[in-house]
Structures are given as structure tokens and as C-alpha cells.
Image 1 (cartoon, rainbow, N blue to C red):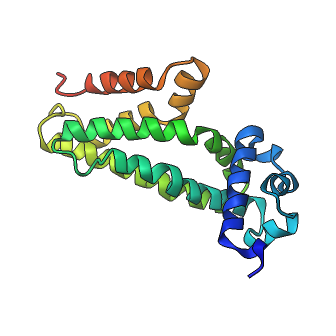
Image 2 (cartoon, rainbow, N blue to C red; image 1 turned 90 degrees about the vertical axis):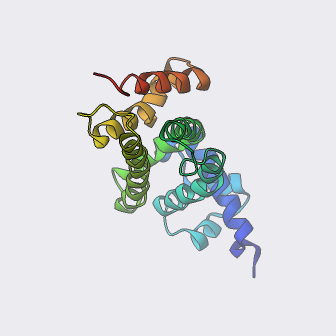
Length: 197
């Protein structure tokens, strides 16, 4: 197998693409510049990815494996003893993941408007994330932590908004909050809705 077709070459390209997309955005990062940064030819990129959108889609899946899964392992939501523990684990995981992926998410958001394949890759992940939040909310409901009139889906919606990348960007990136400050704010704010009248 030639070096350009090897798995390690694919990883080199993905890491170079990540750096370029994070620095320059989707439109600013050209395949030629990505190839140069990866130390391969532009043709080598096409041996692995048919287009820039396909490269970004593959990068999204790569980042899920390298950045997101380890965070979820450190904050095991489903193994939490109580619903409140699961809520805290969810918040901690979402804040840490946001700190790792917000830059690449900017490029993905731009690309999804123009490329259906990017949208098709992102949508299931977003649905999965909401499913986790809803499961935590349902567990809170079952354990009596939610007010009787509050639907689990309404609580999940609030948690979705508080931990979303848009909120993270506004408070941490634009306003300069620390990760700990942001995490504590989310935790305090969402707990205002537990057992409220």
C-alpha cells in the first residue's frame, strides 16, 4: 500500500483539516492548504475524500471518537446512582465537549447550509444528544425531582438551551467566562426548576 493510501495518512489529513477549519472556517480552508499542512498532495486528499464537504463530515465523526467519547467515559451519565447525579454528569459532559468542539462546529454550521450530506451527519448526533437530555429529565420525573405539572420534555428543552453551543459561545468565548463558571451557572439555573411551585 502506498503511503498516501494508509490509515495514518487519512488521520494526518483529518488533523490538518481540523486545524485549518478551526483557524479559517469552512470557506477559508481550501483543500490545497489542507494538503500542504498535512504534508501530502492535493490528489492524496481525493484518494480518501471525494470533496471538502465529505472531508468535513469525516472529520466530524473523527472528532466524536477522539474528543467526545472520552468525555462521556469520564462522566458516565447512565451509571449515575440518582437522577440528580445524572443531571450533574450531563452538564459536566456537555460543557467539556463544547470546549473541545465549538470551533469546528462553526465550520460545520456553515457547511450544513450548503451540503445535505453534512446536515445528514449532524442531525442524528443532535437527536441523540437531545435523547440523552430527555432520558435524564424522565428519570428526574420518575424520582420526583420535577414539579408535578412540568413535562420531562420541557425540562429537556431548557437543558438543551442552557448547554447548547450557542450559549457556550456567548458566555465563554464572547463574555470570557471560565468553564467552571459556565458549568456552575448551568447547574444553578437548571436546578431552579426542580421541585418549584
